[in-house]
Length: 150
Image: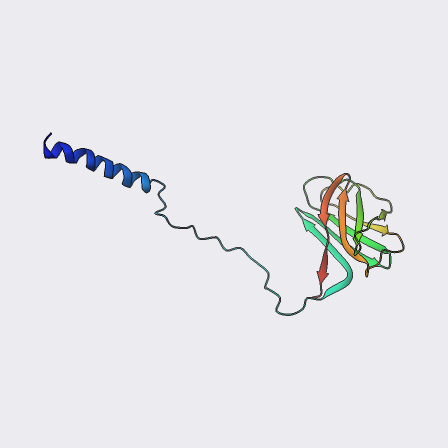
């Protein structure tokens, strides 16, 4: 076999390896993450409004304000669908689960707001609350968060 015939398969192999190693087109660079808006990191202790909790997700906003074991919940529905009647539960610092009673609980049409009175057992107060959960019908929407002082 002549020298050019021996070199040709070697050249084809090298070209195939080079093309195979760089075929993804990104040159091996790591993509730069896009910047997303974030809240500033607190530089000191965060203080919260006593007894005030907020839920906000996918167009549903609910504010819950306690006065002893009674509370008022304001719900705004911009979810694009009707929300079933709301209900609430609390898990206290010991892990005990307590259901609230939502007076006149009713569905909330899309684009509407509603205010509900909520009563919890006597041992549920703003001092004993660990977590507050929100349901619409049988769907658990998640937990409220304490509202930071402005």
